[in-house]
Length: 619
Image 1 (cartoon, rainbow, N blue to C red):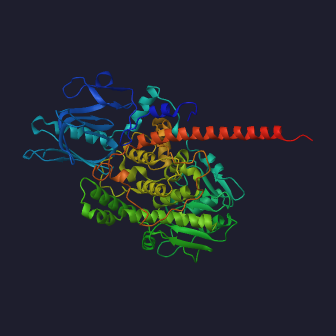
Image 2: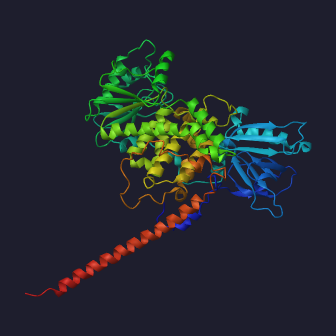
Image 3: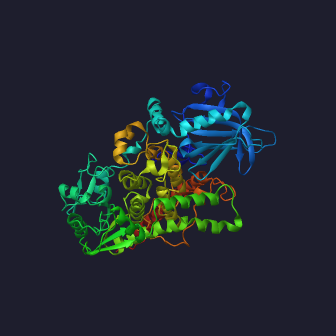
């Protein structure tokens, strides 16, 4: 950020919409850049088009069946990026009703009613969204407007199911043509630079590019940090005994004690309890790289029953008899299917209507907060081992790309203040989630219409929720605010940026996303001020080095600002960005006032010293 520019000028440069999916376009007129509506006429649109955004359909006689205000008549616009509805002005009506939904947020689209439907607003389309809301639009049967709207929504919300491409590619291409430059978010994470920050290479650890062609493990990054005692050939052998070849590699190192966090997948022990000398030796290398402890702790994210059941599929867990000086702990975090069902229940409880008398029991029955507590508790246990006991920890679940990422990323956030800054948090996501192969494409379902796919699950959402929970307990420990986290969640779904596309680093390299799409971090870092936490001690060293949140159901609460934001009865409209601007402006004034007082104090001290010298008796 440029310190010479005023805070007000910087904040005025970007205005975020209420759902954080803000637009920054060159044109907002159908007549200049975009075709006319269904009648071929030209008219102004009330939203700013993004670069690469083009009209697909427009209907001026659609009714939005709002669950809170009732049926609202208005105009519906569909582009290759969004669905936009705005109520038409009527006499004695309040503010216009606006619905602005990126098509990537849509999970499925269904037709409601048929030719025989007679009830009011019984014929139309229902849209089920990934961001906790459903939308219903009624159409008039006689003009057949539903057919084209349904078709355009299908082909543009699910382009991969219709041989199309996600909007991120058109957006970046138009950015390049229109000369939209700026800070490159793809440069935020450089693996070797991050390893150097952690103190690697050193006497016990080295960096290797053995996976540069993604041949050893196609879901791992190109660059690893591994024990210096392990040769590349040895690493190849170890990989064969781990599920998906995801052998233990370094995530984080304590610069003071050399205690480490490494991540991997389950060992392939099977029902017969197979052993592998190379894998056992490799874990001893990890233990011996930490001179502070003669123990190694394995944190298995799964419930013990699940880990045992995985033996029947050829997986399993490390035996304390086979792996010397190793202790294993099961953290009782359930699988992706349990989490998907839990979030579905949260949606039912929050949207569209709620029963106040049963609200608390409805949330309790979702088990969502219990699952969040388990993730937090697991991370706290890792922190305790690494920080308090100076013991190295190996973290895994089954394949090591879901629960493992939750635990390593969250424990690193608690241990290292760098990851609690905006840039540091971006690095954390790039490293622990993106480069280590969390399957974003499958878990979120970008651009495909397989809404019932069993691979979909809110794993990354749970991590962001866990970060928010920590922020509620330590409100001055993070440089970023809630709006930053919600923006990340919104663009996880939006498909406007390339950051969360594909499943692995290898796939992103093959798709050349760095050159063919824009990074979310480019967007965020170009307007940082709206994402900053005014309570963050930017001018002191007041932030705690290590955070130990209370991992109790009493301390964990539902994130209403995210899950309930579409329900006005549960979450009053929040003007978070405006409030942040006000607080930052006040903070700026207070900083100036403090500096003025310090200057006056220094001048007063200097004057008193001068007066004392002049008044001293001469001998």
